[in-house]
Amino acid sequence: MESSSAEVVQRLRDVGLRVTAPRVAVLDVLAGHPHATADTVATLTRKRLGRVSTQAVYDVLAACVDAGLVRRIEPAGSAARFETRTGDDHHHLVCRSCGRTTDVDCAIGQRPCLTPSDDAGYLLDEAEVVFWGLCPDCRTDRAGAPVPSSTRST
Image (cartoon, rainbow, N blue to C red; front, side, top):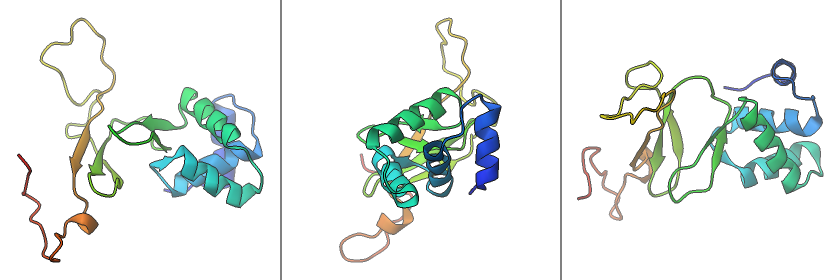
């Protein structure tokens, strides 16, 4: 879901962040490239703005995560990824082969959409689930034959 720059500016103002060219560019990049790594965001932001340091991009991402404009996800064994889809309880599908990450809506729909057998006294507000497997592009074996979606390694 891509946002217009005017919407990005308003979102920044709504959470009390100063509107700067790097912040607008980073949020624009993430709107068009959900689940991007910080390095990818930095590269794409430089294409839009010219010179911007990697540290500046990291600072923008951190400020936007703290303000609730960006969600940081950290699939095991992968670099942190960032997305602008926040405020809902969705999960992710991650390809074991290429790392492609796809949003998947919560199975039940209320926050948190999963309830542990024992909450140990915690007040739960979010459940983060990562489903692992092979994306459609990686589901072919070396011979080129499709791998059935129900195939699982044991």
